[in-house]
Image 1 (cartoon, rainbow over the protein chains, first blue to last red):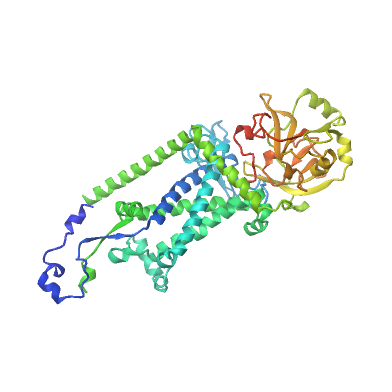
Image 2: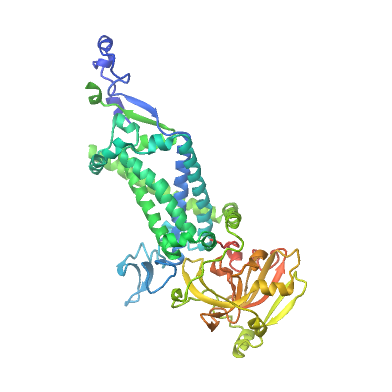
Amino acid sequence: MTSLVENLPDTQSPANDPQKRSALPTLPTIPVGVKERVYRHKLPVRLGHWLNVVCVFILIMSGLQIFNAHPALYWGDRSDRDRPLLSIRPIRVEDGSIRGITTILGHSFDTTGVLGYSSGSGRAFPSWATIPSARWLAMGRQWHFFFAWVFVLNGLIFTVYALISRHLTRDLAPTGKDFGEIGKAVKEHSRLRHPKGDDSRRYNVLQKLAYLGVIFGLAPLIVLTGLTMSPTIDTAFPWLLTMFGGRQAARTIHFIAAFSFVGFIVIHVSQVILTGFLNNLRSMVTGWFVIKQEGIHHEA
Amino acid sequence: MKLENTMKRRQFLKGTLGAASLVALAGCDNLTQSGWFPSILGMAEKVTDRVQRAITPTKALAKEYTEADLSAVFPANGNTDPGTQVYDHMLRNNFSDWELTIDGLVSKPTVFSLAAIKEMPARTQITRHDCVEGWSAIGKWTGVPLGDLMHKVEPLAQAKYAVFHCADVDEVGIPYYESMALHDVFHPQTILAYELNGRPLDVPHGAPLRLRFERQLGYKHAKYVTCVQLVESLTGIGGGKGGYWEDQGYEWYAGI
């Protein structure tokens, strides 16, 4: 934030020269090279966001606890144990030691220390990745289902809010212009160049697509595949089984979706850090985001 | 200079995030160990129970599969052999003297012989067994609908639950038991099964009589059933939570 001092308005700039200002009435009221505070995130969005951080953190880690109870994934309705798509198991090797072996589609990897065997115990995901940290399926389920309800209600409330407040149509829905700029945005992002100044007032097209994809794609997918694992829900809505290809397939998709969520979080947090960690964090806590105006924009 | 700052900032961020997640994790473990937090978490079970019951028609059937869908191996979980003297004796006699008692809040408490149960009209269903651990297996079960037995014993109006007492005990001698709401007893797929995949039940799968409760998880499907007791309340039975696993923290409502 100290850099803002260096960017204090130059007293010689036209906008601050009273004589020249009258000659240039169309110049923006914001002087160049100065910071502007904008109210970027409304309270319901901020509350929903942080509640979601808590839920997703707990859901993923309690989910890994549940996965550890049967650390293998399958397709279809049954678990044919000789044909898992993925398995993470402790295996005793020839010299008598135990190794953590992860097998994906028939290819095995030694993942000792992290997956399959860690800190002297045979467990798929290590204790630092599960809630509770000890092996405790019943408690993992308690955490998971409580926060699953919070996650679902939070999502429903957000959706209603986003529709009524027009947050969805105004801020999240990509415009025609946005779609035309996808190529450019991908190029800029891959060079870690992010929109600055006035362009950072609004979400860019990649942000919009990522947020919409997670909120209205990944989150419903993760909830529905979770529900498909419920024998009672399958009785009420048998089409869920058809849609996802069976209960074990739904479990696999649930797992993949959870890791897609982890992938989103990694990218999201990296972007937050790259585009000004404290500024972004402040805007999601207090709502206020600082935009640094750059002179070049206003000289045209 | 600038690079150095970036590196410092990166280390700082890494350190902060790492420390924050460790604190959060330790916090979660502390909450787990506290008395009050798990009881708040436990409220979700009641919400799930109410909501799932509200949206699931009472007589809706669990999906039934075909012979082609059967699991090649149907895993046996939990206690796989009661191993008691009484049970071993019955096993040697091919369970010819096995009896099922239905008592508690019923007008006509009755003892059914295994032979009498097998003479009643049977139901065969190919269903999916979903274990709380996460795996599923498909098996063909044949048995007597529990509702048919209930009509013979006539439950009293105040009966709310059916408790299933079993012949198996765990390694420290605690007997297995389970329970379900009375209306689930009358679900057409709730059966006391004596055959798996066309053969008499073997010991690991609950010989000679085990419960099938198709719309809930595997641990609800009590094996080696000797007695069905109708009660008004689950307190005072076992640990009071309505089942062997329930007494150890698993949900009584095991619909998910």
